[in-house]
Image (cartoon, rainbow, N blue to C red; front, side, top):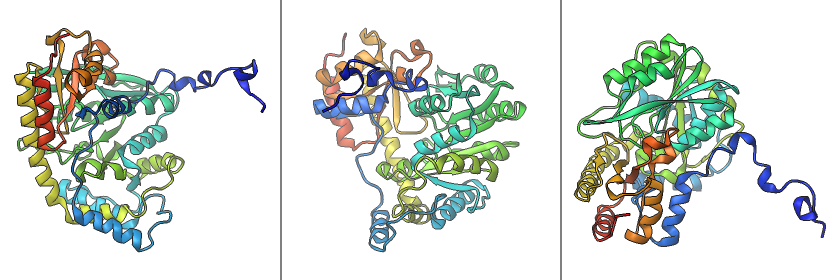
Length: 403
């Protein structure tokens, strides 16, 4: 058998062939920590997927589509009934009028939507401002596009994390091509308030920047708050690409059905990239998601109430353990500070935690350019059964958490 490359005594090894733009992008922390949970049998409070499935009627709708022959390629932009359902949803909840024919595109989850938006809008060397800490796929897609990342800081306050408006105004300039925003924000749980939204709109309009906003937790906000889309602010409709998905809203994260909405020109730019990624996806699941948007929003209201109770349970338990949790305004996640226990950083803490307590969490430093800022922060997911959260807290109480 002929050997090739280094095995034959010449050439480069496969490890040398990774594209340069990806060499500084680490493997996603979610794969790393979920693998650790599987390997150790630990309770997984790391990756953000729920223990419960979504509404049975949505599953039955998917089964009907499967058995009804909807198993071949869907139209590239998505099946008409889902695009129409998304448009009706945006009008009903936010007063946003969209033409489903050219202002809505269905994607393989929000992750593909983000990738397609960045790849469709960013040229090599373009600056992309992104709120830090950021979901880790943002870093990877900016790198794949050859963009130059500029971090916009958040800061912890007595009221939780808030957007640093000075950092926003310094980070978004005439050189900025895209501002990538996430609200409700993963991992901090921050929901942009009126002043923060106004500041984002002001810098975007002043510098003629396209805003890509990840809104996957739009309905999972707590304590009477309401999500307000950035596209509804003055001057923002024509420059905002909005992203959401069924995964978090309806507890079907494995379906990977998301969508992009916005002005026709920008949505076309996203589609120009999306068509070369998956082209199309999840043909029999798309009509089921349309059914969910039309008929199961009551489920989502109940889900948000349940998650608020679970948030309170987890925050109380972490506070009792002196892990200094930050009470989130939305999302699935709580950040806490482990420095009280003498660990060098959250990564070291999280790597030791399965053996010490039988629990897995996510080190938040993976979401920071300024690693020192997030070094002692750990992210915990509360989108789990109450019994699972109680078990995890019990195991943490019984563990030695000191370094």
